Amino acid sequence: MRAALTGNYREEHVFALRQALELYDFHQAKIAECDVVIEAVLQRLNQDRETPEKPLPDVQHAKGRNEPRFDPRPALYTLLGADLTQIHGFGPYTVLRLVAECGDDMSKWPSAKHFTSWLCLAPGNKISGGRLLSSKTRRSSSRVAALLRIAAVNIGRTQTALGAFYRRLAARTGKAKAVTATAIAAIFAETRGRYGSPRVHAELRVRGQQTGRHRVARLMRSAGLRARERRRFRCTTDSNHGMAITGNLLARRFAVLVPDTGWVTDITYLWTLEGWLYLAVILDLFSRRVVGWALHERLERKLALEALHMALAQRQPAQGLLHHSDSRQSVCQR
Image 1 (tube, rainbow, N blue to C red):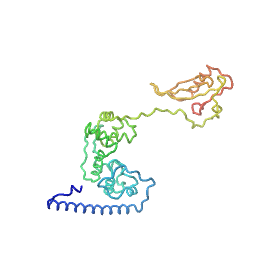
Image 2: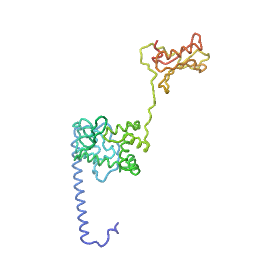
Image 3: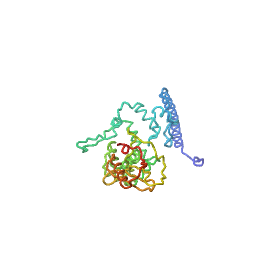
Image 4: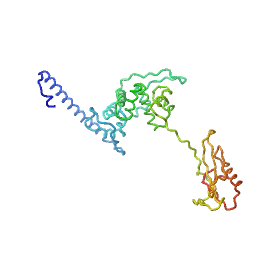
């Protein structure tokens, strides 16, 4: 480096370089003074505020070149009650500018839709009879809207999973489709993978982004986003009833030496092409054989009775039979 700085320079070049260096040092000194004033203002705003109980989350981004020299995150966390820098594309400097423009009181906007309308970021959709007549976004000189647009652009440049996702799709399908696909991926992540293409399409329309449902399905397939199927479940045990319940006489003694002296019963559910069907089964503890069963479309009293009648008719047990079941209502009702 020393060798690179040595040489024969013309006098006007040295003068211009000296002027540029002095100007740079002057601006750096002014920026440092601004940082001191900003830090003092934040401390003054937080004088009467309590520190949140939850600790400050970890930093989600690397420090930028234009960020303040001090760390404003603790003061902003106390002022807002939340760490906005956890949002993709939001750094401390962006949050400071948002607070300067909007303040810390958002009650002036009754809902998120009112705030979005004030920003003029969402299109004013005119719908009649289920058809979209027009969709235009109003022009706005709001500095907050400009900050949010810059933050949205910065997401594609960040070293995050969402930024890498956008860059991959932008290189493969173009920026227009990549923006829509990134919005789909964000909704998919927010819902923890439970939304399929119809619900993602509906959520996009709510957020003001117009796109076709077939395009949403196609983009989700190309990105490998598939909703998790919810497991079908039917509750078959309802012990909250006022009917008589016998004590547990079996006491988990499942080893029986004589046939037809101990039966256990249970009710389960089956998903068939006809819908849900409930199955009641009675099992002999000695032979582990099904001695009675019944199938019905409703969880009613006769389901358990039909299984019991079949078992009694087939086995004809002697006196002293112990019939064990849980305390579900369909078994206890008389």
